[in-house]
Amino acid sequence: MNPMITIRDLNKSYGSKRVLSGINLTCQAGQIIGLVGPNGAGKTTCLQALLGLTDFSGEIDVLGHHPQKDRVAMLEDVAYIADVAILPRWLKVSQALSYMNDIHKNFNLEKAQAFLAKTNIKTSDKVKALSKGMITQLHLALILAIDAKVLVLDEPTLGLDILTRRQFYTHLLEEFYTDDKCIIITTHQIEEIDHILTDVAFIQDGQIVLAQNTDDIRERFCLLAVSNEHLEQAIQLKPLYKNSLLGLTSLLIDHTQLDDTQRAHLPTLGDVAVPSLADIFVGVMSKEAC
Ligand SMILES: Nc1ncnc2c1ncn2[C@@H]1O[C@H](COP(=O)(O)OP(=O)(O)OP(=O)(O)O)[C@@H](O)[C@H]1O
Image: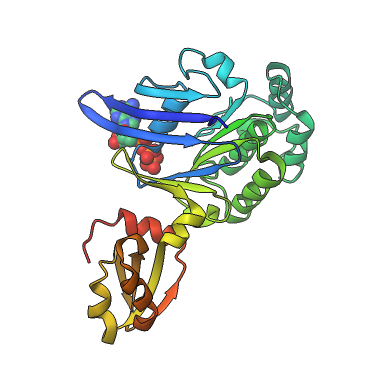
């Protein structure tokens, strides 16, 4: 099956400043990819290139379209939520709904209304009377009601309270996602989407440093909790990251860096646990040598 999105050797500079270097990424139907990286890593720039919002060098194919040359055709099947939701302040919610219904052939009015019914937003409200979080909710209602094949979400829950953030991800899975679609999502709150991601791509200084299926990545790494007695031996395993608390040290270990004997020896040094994606992210991004 052809990927829905292919990015090959994507590079982007602003003046003399290189912000994306040799990015390669593919996205297949059914995948929910988390593009995760620290501030300024290049996440938004990468999504903007994908959406044809900025020029770039390299190759990008979205559903057979070039994002800049075939942008209009591409956008029929691609929906996008930017990290800043901007809607005209004078607009009424009812007008926003009918506008979307008129201009987008894949917009499902009932879906948007059902989403809004779970919020405090009334169709008679004007945008200027909504709080920041409510404007984000309205924006999400409008975008998630588009029956798009590809959904691109840049920090979609920024500014939402925790209940609404959870509701959003439940809604995303139950009402939007099907296995013939793909979703790319950036967030700083990786622990909140840990359970919905099929894949992650960690980006740092404009480069993908790790891209892997989430099941494989959880098998690849482990968290080893050791007491001081075994610490010296455990450090020989070249952990990516260590964190000491109350006499126990947690070490993030990459199994691929160990031989069979070292792997077998791990449980004799301490408790071995499956790390969260946030643990792995911190370990991989950490520049501190152990
Ligand atoms: N229009 C621009 N002109 C010049 N530099 C820019 C521009 N937009 C982004 N950059 C730079 O590109 C780099 C990547 O920015 P980008 O917004 O893609 O990062 P990000 O990973 O989305 O960060 P954050 O998590 O903080 O939103 C940063 O160093 C930023 O300063």
